[in-house]
Length: 452
Image (cartoon, rainbow, N blue to C red; front, side):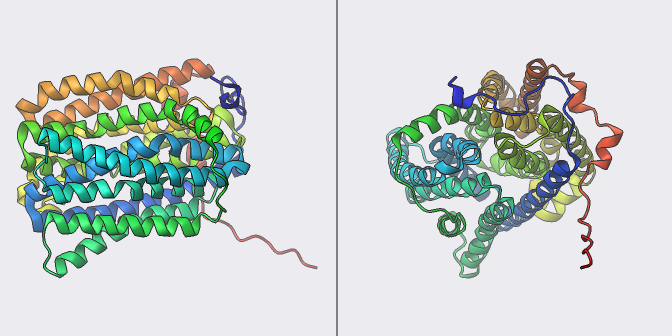
């Protein structure tokens, strides 16, 4: 590990460092704004799934889920390492932002075309199409340069500390997808191909908007900076890829072992469970650049974020379990009633995942992204083994059990690791305290105006 990646601030042992009240209040407001953006994104995504499910049925939704998963996988492979580096280096060294932007556009353009072409060639040689046409696969491949560039430019906005425009960009893509899809369906183009074209259009608009919002001039391309970015990013990106497989490998296995209709049902269960992910995702999104920029609070700050995130996520999981069955029937109809049991089985894993997200973001902000890779690598084998064992017999429910086991194992590893690194008790990271309630963000008070 090179010196530039060593923790530079706030890595004191234990919880002796005081959490600044004003800092946590500002963090809380930014987290709430980010959560609101993610929640609205979930609503838009829910509308999107409902519309597609109603018009295309379980099989059509299953094919589309796999196609979008292919795009997400390609984007992760192409852009994830640079995305982590853009946040870390962009927050820690503002002078590099212009060069980071130029490097990002070059890598996403050249790499996206190459990766898309390679994927199409492999699918053609192997005879894989996942129930889709080759035109649909080609359009998904064509989306890779756009989705990768959009992600890389958008996180540079976050690296500058402007969480609000970052949230608007993130929300915009989720709003455009159902809007463009609804337009296509209104014009009587009710097919998977129409939805894929709408997705391609939405990604192009998001990239254009991100380039307008980022507000930084292009710098000279820098090979040295690209190498430095990849050194940092790959240590965390390997883990993100493994974790993504933990999240999504079951879709491919369910498709292969139980068919596209079962994938459609399982995608509803996962979609509802992922609503809860927005809580820790919002906090970790703001925490990462905050730690990298050297903001005060140290480990004590992260411990408080972890405790509150876990408590709120657990409460939300209990509420969703109570209303899940009628909600599924109301939104998706009786054809998707089988999604309820897998959704419930995912709840413990989603709650555990809230811990992983917070601790991994803190460690990445301290120049230690590799620990999330270790956690994800250790649990990927567990995911694959349990999926192969459980999906043939129990279908979507078996996939949900495997996912919960993997998420829980990842959380346990990061809890033990964080505790040993910083000399704090695991209970400090998971058990909410009375004064944590008072730390929740409050509405801004109007400032008193001094009389002349």
